[in-house]
Length: 139
Image (tube, rainbow, N blue to C red):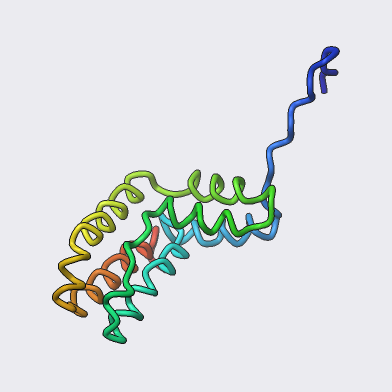
């Protein structure tokens, strides 16, 4: 490693995930194009619709928003590494498609709440979860 010049700070090492986290995420991406954990962001909408508490339903997070939130809850300095590791393995076209579905749902959310349309919420959650878990290959 090159010695820093006088007054220069040595470059900081990039934070990395633990081998266990890498192994778990790599195993998931062997099967899926996207991080299926993102499906957890859909559960509160599904639960509130099921309970008839439509006023409690919040806009669904995009793929990146959800991953940033999860990463921010992780111990520092791994949080940025977690987000970057997943995004590097996620299929960018499928991320964009997922985000389009989320945006369309969110754009219609006020109508869904006003109409108390449980079916639209449940159909969206089912479609979005199905999209997140499209398999790379058949078993």
